Length: 77
Image 1: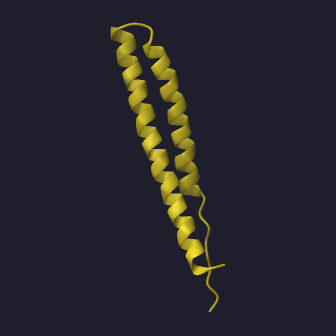
Image 2: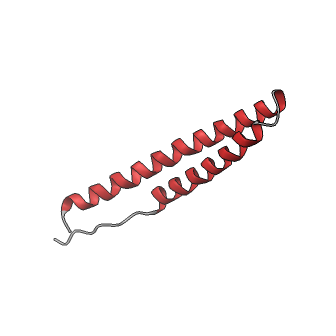
């Protein structure tokens, strides 16, 4: 295994963690917007709320995968 492979694995984990956090925030915003629209305008807020839940779950999965998939690289000297 090359020395740069460990760094690339860490960068991939950080990328997935940040992507998961972005999806979590987007899903939460869509859910909140859906609740507000549902209470003021009409029933179209339910669609945003359900889509927000889907995006939120995807964000949880991405963040969990980025946080838990660590490869420990040991160097033999």
